[in-house]
Image (cartoon, rainbow, N blue to C red; front, top):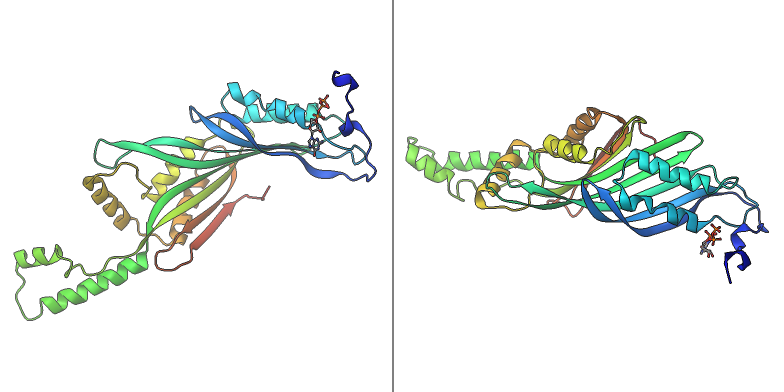
Length: 298
Ligand SMILES: Nc1nc2c(ncn2[C@@H]2O[C@H](COP(=O)(O)OP(=O)(O)OP(=O)(O)O)[C@@H](O)[C@H]2O)c(=O)[nH]1
């Protein structure tokens, strides 16, 4: 029995004519080349079914077109080529093609002070679309960082001032006594709260972008925040991290504004959306801020 003798249900006419917005496959396992590494990816591949009379699309044609990612790094040109295959293999059926790739890259990050390094993971998503309006590609990546509450820091400082005032009332200030007091927990009696935080950055690339600016996006965002999560940490690194947090006190609004400025300065970015989530240690809920520029949800 060969393909010619097998019934092709997809090619039949349907009894309930209706065009469909998206038809395809979700969560396909797929190796991807990104950031000069091979990662375990997942793909959602689909097309619109504009011919409402046609029973179905040809799933295998979309699936086989994904093989192109096995040999080459993911670039806007490759995404456009694969979407072109989706449409070419669905002539008269589909006007729009969609592809979402998901995965995470591991980047080796140096410690702040010690000569150590370790791996940090960055979840990412790439969404591409080819339709009558043209080719459209978005890159999304999540970046973890630390945020120390500026209000909490100010309140802690006030308590320290009050304790200082009480402990050194009615006595001349002695340098050695003050130094010892500064190093004691009864002197520095309050600390501000910090939280592990996440920025989810989505950028829509300009049509002329030849590469996905994954590393630039991550590096620039971490630089803008100043308190990226660390990997290998010795005490010297932890002390440097404490200093970085103290010098970068951030409400979620502050983090969002820093990142807005950072994304607005990136070349070949036509629009962006960002969302920061501070998983509060003061509350049992999160503090969240969003910002965007020239952004329409896809
Ligand atoms: N359209 C459609 N196909 C499905 C679905 N679920 C499973 N399939 C199967 O996907 C398989 C591949 O479909 P096609 O790409 O049309 O396969 P084919 O007819 O051998 O390939 P072509 O000759 O290229 O059309 C078929 O065996 C379908 O039964 C579904 O919900 N919709």
